Every structure is written in structure tokens, then in C-alpha cells.
Image (cartoon, rainbow, N blue to C red; front, side, top):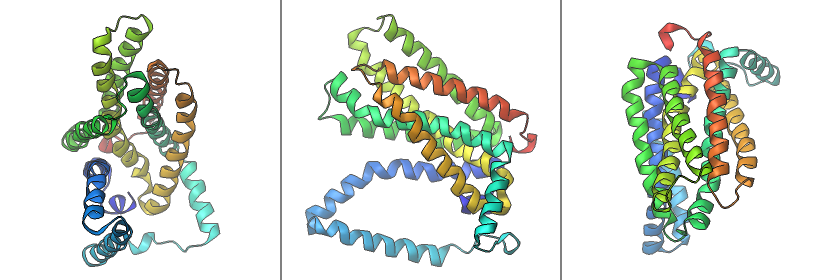
Length: 284
């Protein structure tokens, strides 16, 4: 993210991050297959050797192909005082904090779905053995959100894309909650609808995370590295804390997860509206 912010800003940065996240989304799908192939050819110990090979290739590619992106005038000495000063500046920026909070809520919904998905597939729908296949299918479908976002974010802007994604997710989740609460969801439709809802959570992450990162780092071009570190840490820790009570509320149904998701989306929409007053039209 820091490198992307050094090279790009605003909508263009959001577009680049969409492609980056697209690769990150696909990697967990193909990694197990690659690991299986390595173990099949050279034995399971070869997987550990592959770590060294992949690391060497990555370092070589980085050194050969990527020049230093941090401008000389933005370089800061690695001193505790400078780190504290930069952290204070970042946390006092209202736009950065609001964008980071919206990202945290979207991340929290994703973490909650990840934490509960195996229980839902296994205990609710008795699909333990086929869970990896269904999970992989969700990831493949949801990865297209990043490609769509890369095309529309330049035209609509980061905040508008996230706003629309949250509204659609909120509406779908509200209907899903009502169907469960009233017992109106037929048994033969329960799994397909749940699968679509869980996929929509991944889809929201595809539209939300890259765009909110771009919004948060927009004012931090002079300290993108520190800004990316703090925003990411804030979002990751916050999302983990939000997902714990939602995951623990699992009661053999999808209702606690969907209710928690509805609350997170509602708060995210509220904070996003607060962010609008701080957002410059050119980088919306």
C-alpha cells in the first residue's frame, strides 16, 4: 500500500489496489494445489525448501524491477520521536480516522464470515467434506469484485462505490435476517441463499477495502509507509475484536452472523456519510 501511495493517489490508487487485492484473493485458492503438487513430486519437506526458493525469486524481482518509490524529500529518520510525531499527525487527521473505521467495520464483517463459515457449512448444512470446494467457489466469484471496482472507481469515485456496495449489502442482509427470523425461508432454499449471502460479504470486501485504503492514505502521501502500517494495524486488530463476539454468538443458525453483519454495515454507512464532508471532490 505504501508503494502504491508513493506512485499513485486518489482514484488511480484505488484502481491499482483493486488489481493487487485481486491477486491476493486468488492466491489462497491456488496455493493448496501448488503445495500438494510440490509434496507429491519431492515430498512434504520440499514445501519448506520452496519457501526459500519463492523468497529468493521475490527478492530478486523486487531488487531488479522495482526502483525506490519514496521521494527523497519524504524520507524521515528512523527515530522514536519522529515515529511518535508521525503517529500523532495520522491519528489527528479526521479523514484518515473515519476511513480507517469504515475499513475496520468492513474487515470485521469479513473476519466474522471467515470465522463462522466452516461451522455454517458443517453444522448447519452438513457439508463439512465439501466445504473447501464451496469456499474456493466463493473466493473465485468474489474476486471479480476487484476487477469490476477497477473499472468503475475511476468514474464514480471511492466513496460512492463503497456507499453503493454497503447499501446493496445492507439491503440483502436485512432481507436475509427477516427471512430467517420469520421462518419464511424454505429449507430447500436455505443453503443457496446462505451461500449467496456469504459470497456477497466477500464481494463487499472487494469493493470496500482497496477504496477505503486509498481514501485513508490520500492525505498521507508524505508518510505513506507509516500511514499504511498504522491504518492496516488499526483495521486488522479492530476487525478481530469485532468478529470475536459475533463468532461466539453462533447458535447453530446463520442468524447471529447476519444480525452482526447488519449492524456493522449500518454503522459503516453512518461513518461513510460523516466522511463525505471531509472529502475533496477531485479524489472522491
